[in-house]
Image (cartoon, rainbow, N blue to C red; front, side, top):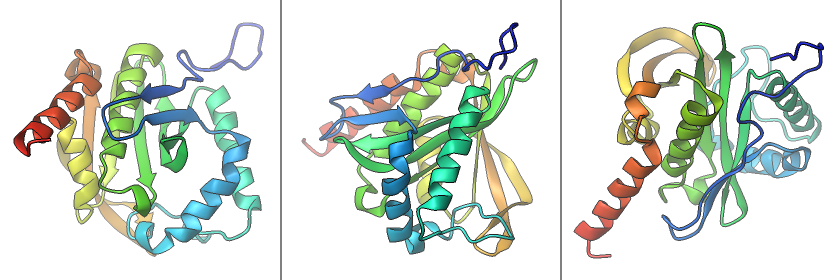
Length: 222
């Protein structure tokens, strides 16, 4: 997005830090990606290489997991530059203040579409705690209510049942298979497209997710 004077402007509602302080055992936060995140990002990605490799989009011509810090610094700079242009909203996911993963709303198209795609990953150490559904619910509410997007897609490999459960819990609609749409783990892979529109989230995803978590705790007597 560009102001009339030609200077670069952030998208409406960005940068923004979002926090759910009490739903889980510790607070979950989304904070805009910063230069200082390059090192913990590199460390998490290298440590979780085997955990993430089957699901992460790759460039057919370059390796996914770099061990040096330089490529991560470059990626941070690129994503922050895209955020200033209003085409990417890159967050780090924090759990109790610790770097736990990343969530990015990207490929933003303005004009008559106001659409985007969302991707996320989590350190295996924090998997299964409800962190990513909480973070995704916060991000979607912010994108619809503050940023002004209308439709957001998530494309997920059919075999990635954990990630599919995340979007299904939050009410994303399954729209079918996109054949060989992304290069993942050495080959072009089919992905299931899930989507959500602003009309699907009028009351907010986070209140819906809070109700789900509390109902689940009640069933098991917590």
